[in-house]
Length: 189
Image 1 (cartoon, rainbow, N blue to C red):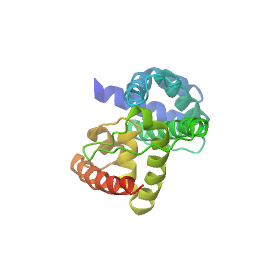
Image 2 (cartoon, rainbow, N blue to C red):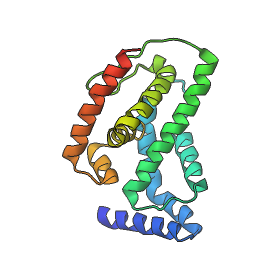
Image 3 (cartoon, rainbow, N blue to C red):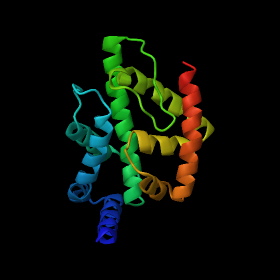
């Protein structure tokens, strides 16, 4: 059943590549629940009174995807990888607005076990994580993508492996290395 669903999503994405405008509309029922799950995971790390809700995050990401031109969709995993990046951009934009209003200088708390930033410090910290991720991308693009898909996209190791076309062991290795690098960079601040 899952393989059939994956194949159907891939076919719809290929139809989109071919210029079939209704493919975008056909895609929504297949990906909406997964995007909503990812957004819920991501937003669960945010402060309780956050003005951006999971549904709004999904809708904004999908609106941005629908406006994209020139993307050659490869498959379902590629689609979810792109949405991870878009969710990151949306949250960073939102955090910039929030930080501009607040202009606080809270410290960053970062757990070696995972990227764990306290809710009350998240808006300022998400901007710093975004900047550090950009630096990591210049050093090791694979590691930066793993972090982005995990932190901003809420993807698990298997989903990240599929999206990047690498093994789960490689994802675990990349995550471990990236996590230590990020810890070192973020604790320097």
